[in-house]
Structures are given as C-alpha cells and as structure tokens.
Length: 378
Image 1 (spheres, rainbow, N blue to C red):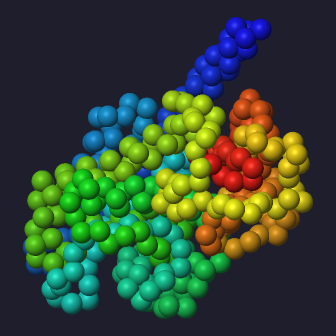
Image 2: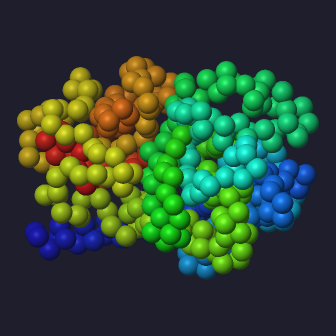
Image 3: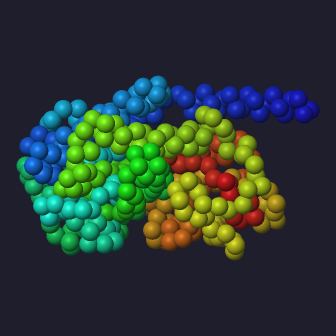
C-alpha cells in the first residue's frame, strides 16, 4: 500500500512539474524616458542613457541565464514611449513582472545624497516620495491629448495623487517581495547606499496587470554617483544587483508553481518568522474570519491546512467585494496593516493544487500558503 501511495505521489509530482513548465515566464524591462524625453540631465550625464544601459545589461543577464524566461523591452533604442504605452506592452504580453528603471535627482544643481531605492505602487507617505512621483509622471506633458488619456490627471497637483489611496493593488505582496530582494542586493551586490523600499503614485505602474516595481538607480546630480552610473562598469554592477533580486524572486515563483518543489515537502515544524517580503506573519490568536472557514478547528487541529492566497489589500474588504471576482467564501489573515485574502481550505495537497488552478483563471499569480493551528507557516 505504501509503495502504491508513493507511486501516486510521484505521478502527481511529475504532473505538477510538467503543467507548471508549460509556458515561459515573461519579464518586461522598461528603460525610463527616451527620445524627446531626456529625463533628468546634469551636464554630460543623461538619465535616458543610464536607464537604457542598465536595462539592456539586465536583459542580457536574464536571457543568458534563464532559458525559460522571455525578456521584452519597452525600448531598446533612444525613442520616446508614452507612459500608458509602456503598461500596454506589459499587459498585452501577459507579463509576469514589470521592472521600470530610472535615475533619481533633486531640484538642486548638485547634491550629496546618494543611493538606490525601489518603489512599489501606492500613496506617497512623504513629500520626498511625492516629488519623485511628480517628476517621473511629468513626462505625460510631452504626450498629445494627455488630459484625456490620463483622465484629467495633473502630475504637478498633490490632489491628483489621492486616487492612489483607494487603489487595491492585487499584486502588492509580490511587488513588495521583488522590491525587497532588489533593494537588498543593491546593498550586498552593488555595494550602494541603501535608501529602502518605498511607495508612490507612478502612472507607469498604475495600469500594469502584474507585480511591478520602479527603480531609482541613484542621483544624477551627485557628481560621483552620476559618473559611476554612466560608466559601463557601474551599469553592469547595478544590472547585476537587479538580476540577483530577480533570480531570487523567480526561484520563489517557481517553487509556488511546483517546478522545483511542491508546497508541503518542506519541514512543517517551522514557526512564524519573517517571510520573503520582509514582514512578519501574524501569530497568536486565530487570524482568520471563522465564519467563512470550510473546515472546523477540530478538523484542522495539529494538521497542515492549505489555502490559495489571491489578493492583498491595505483595507478590509466586504464579503461581497467585486475585488474577489466571484470567489466565495473567502478568508483573510492580517499581516501588520495589510489584509491578505485566501480561498479554499483543505488538508489535501492534491485538492489545493486543483483549487489553485481554478483561482489562477481569475488571479494568475495566486499561490498556495500553509497554516497550522490558525497560524501562517513557511
């Protein structure tokens, strides 16, 4: 009987791997600015050239080392691409990731500020973050009929950015995970000053239908940093750091898709620790909405429970929220100030994989998470 069970599991494992590897992983690399939009310019240093150099070097690293990844560029030459077109390219390709590369600056002619930072979509929490978004969004002023295309959005008006307060970003958790990986590797791989992961309202990220980040490589009005970023060696160093973060994200993605390991093969004795996105998972009291659980506490006592996580929100959503796309009933657990929504509840690995496939039809980046006695575990 044990041999038969083992054979069934092996067949199931092979089935999961073959299905997960059926299509290529797609990453869109966006070199910010270009053509008539030079971005930030200080003397001989031009943002559009730095961005393109790093974008091409990053793409080459991915193409060389990941045959299962298709790299798409929003531009490979010095041409102008509208912001909405950049998102359109990623959405049309049904990309798994969108990485937008930029170079920072301040309003002063020169600055001593240095270092890289990585942004995800959201409402800016400081005047500094807002100013970065204003500068990057101001490119729409070079586009024809921008007031219609961007629904009256004024990149210079703080009031226009209120829309980002109420946006539910389905891909916030994955975006945050990638941002943390990349930002950490700017420090460890490229040896650059660490300015952290931030949030701001970037139009180029607003309409992307996949995990997305925007990178500010450094300050073009810092003479030393501009010289570093303009050199081929500096661009290769920054590209290597982004690639290292991408590689770590891709490894986690593949695990969730069953390519290298199906969830549940790891050591289930692990307790709650910081997860790969750099935030602590909830612990202690039962964190889920018990009225929507499919299994009772008695059913689950001491067992590993599998669910499919499909959505993350900064605010608690009603049970009939259209954001769930018809999934019902759903559960949630709270991770600091963030609500993470799940669907399905079973102790069977095969059943949860079947559920994940159904959820992926609505939320393509949904993935399996594990709980034990009501706590999220690795």
